[in-house]
Length: 98
Image 1 (cartoon, rainbow, N blue to C red):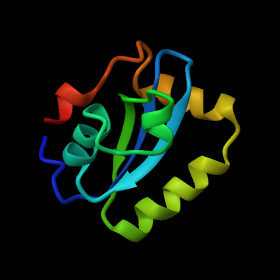
Image 2: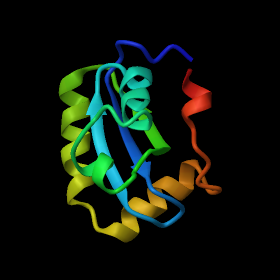
Image 3: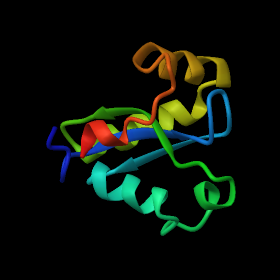
Image 4: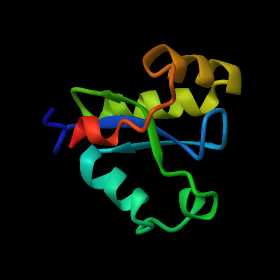
């Protein structure tokens, strides 16, 4: 999969049903690498949220940002259902995108 320079929304998790983080990026592989290697200080760094459990690609950065904002407003159960719909095992999907 070539996700470089394509807008994406992603969800990271500390573990199954653990702490989750929702983000947006124009380069999914690079951004997840930064999270995994503790190069991003902030929420994901503090709470060890480094497992890519969900992502979706978008045609434009505007649509990705809009989707990220919508997802952040969702309640936790909806977010967990979204993750489990794509990734019921809560596997780290990073190897699938590189």
